[in-house]
Image 1 (cartoon, rainbow, N blue to C red):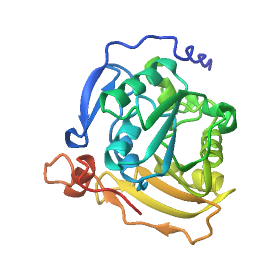
Image 2 (tube, helix red, strand yellow):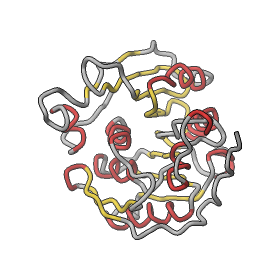
Image 3 (cartoon, rainbow, N blue to C red):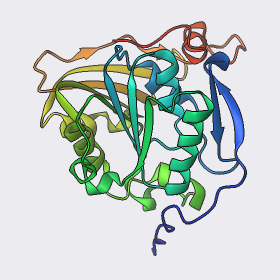
Amino acid sequence: MTVASPPPRGAEPLDEPTENALLGGKVRLLQPAKGYRAGMDAALLAAAVPARPGETVLEAGCGAGAVLTQIAARRPGVTLTGVERDAVVAGLARRNAALNGWSDRMTVIEGDVGRGFKALDLARADWAVSNPPFFDDEGALRAPSPAKRGAWIADDGLAAWTRFLTDGVKDGGRIVIVHRADRLADLLGLLGERCGSFAIRPIQPFVDEPAKRVLIQAVRGGRAPLRLLPALVLHDRSGAKHTAEAEAILTGAAGLDS
C-alpha cells in the first residue's frame, strides 16, 4: 500500500470560515467550512482544566482555538498559549482570540509537536493540554480527506505528543488529554515515564455501552495513587440530544474538575 505524503503545511487557503457559538453563546468560534471541525472532544477537554487566575495553559495542536477559547471563557485571569503547525489554521485561531476579546491573554504560535517543546523556546506552563490525533498509521483507517488529515494522523506518533506535553509543563504541573479509550494503556505507559497521580474519567456514549473516550489528567512528578473517576454519560434513551450532565458541560454551566 502506498501512503500519500502529507500536504504542505499551511499551503492551502481555507474556504471562508463559518461562525459557531460554543458554551451557550459565551464563545464565538470561526471554523473551516470543510475539514476538521471541533466538537464534543474540545468541549470536554476545556471543561477538565480547572486552571486558576494567574496560571498558564499550553495547548499542543490548538487548531482554530476551540479548546483555548472555551478555557478562556471558563477561567478568567488565565494566560493561554496554543501551538499549531498549520500557519493558516493558526491565523484563524488568532482571529478567534480577537473576536472574543482575548488577544491580550491568548497567544497562538506556529510550531510542530514533532520537533519538540524545546525548539519553541517557551517557558513551561502550569497546565499542558491536548486532543492528539487519534491514529498513528494511515493504514489503520480509510484515508481521511486532506483537510482532516492533520487532525486524524499523528505523523510522529503518540509518543511525540506525550513528550511535548511533559516537557512543556512545570514540575508539579498538570497534563490533561482527551483520547480514544482503546489507547488508554499506551497513554499511561508513555506518560508514566515522568508523570503520576493519574485521574481517569471514562466518557460513555450511553450508560450501557463501553467508553469510547477517556479524559486523563497526570501530574509531572506526581506519586499519588491512580484514581478512576465516575464516568460521564453523553446520551440517554429519552430522545434528548444529551444527558442533563453533558448538556451542562456543553453550555458552560458545569465543569469536569477532578
